[in-house]
Amino acid sequence: MTIQRIAVLGGGAWGTALALTCARAGRDVTLWEYESGNAASLEQKRESRFLPGVRLDKSIKVTRDLSETASSDAILVVVPAQAMRSVITSLASSVAMHTPLIACAKGIEHGTHKFMTEIIAECAPKALPAILSGPSFAADVARGLPTAVTVAAADGKIALDLAHALNAGTFRPYHSTDVRGVELGGATKNVLAIAAGIVTGKGLGASASAALTTRGFAELVRFGKACGAKTETMMGLSGLGDLILTCGTPQSRNFSCGVALGKGEKPDTAAHGKLAEGVFTAPVLLEIAREKNVEMPISAAVAAVLSGKTSVNEAIESLLTRPLKSE
Image 1 (tube, rainbow, N blue to C red):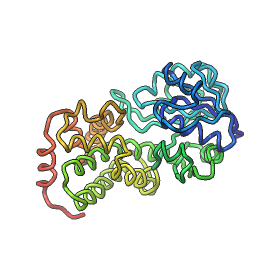
Image 2: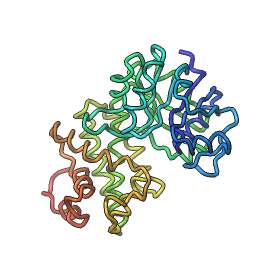
Image 3: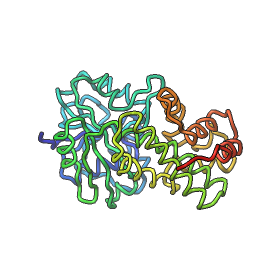
């Protein structure tokens, strides 16, 4: 499959970073942005409001007309997880047969419990669902700093073609056919990053942070197995790699949200107006875990804190007083 024309849906920080990456890879890029103010900034100032100081390559075409992206060879869908369905539905009728639609959001849909590639398959049956995930901050990628991610599709040849198309030297995509494992790792780590932030916000120390991240990874692996993911995927970039990145730095919006919670802020203000996908994913993740009879005490504690059912101190105590068991 020849992939030269790439569309990026979403002009936020991550969408802008991926558009720049595709341009560096020598692709013809169209960047679609829904919000008029940011679209104007991208078009006129060549800068996203969400990624100040980073110039948009002059070769990138900016549009607010979604139909202008439909003829692309591949489309990166870089919108929030809970907006994925509406955007794909709007695009579906004009997308050509077998066009790869690559979800770049890390979450699970409320109500349906569907992962992003499942939404694509349901709403755009002519398209080829794929997922891009891994340890990556938009600011790093936008500035061309070395980053490795995973792109997965059910067809290994499609995944390989996408990896070649997105390869921009310092942005290195590995390819996989474990679609569920890649998207599951990205969704789960956001919830665990909130827990890691709470530990830091409460000042519980480096030892507690290490323990939290390690036991959180055990939850991720258990959940992955129950959902049919490969263990090696959980141990790779989109699993362990992404978990390490987001559980230890304020650049992570989920981690920062957790820090605010640990310092006593209320759940409805802890994200400080920024999108922390883990806030939306936590209750859905817990519902799926219960359906599959998977024990996820850290994720459950995060969901309880976010819902206001328990305090941070009560959540910490509940984890520390769990029965002792073998590792």
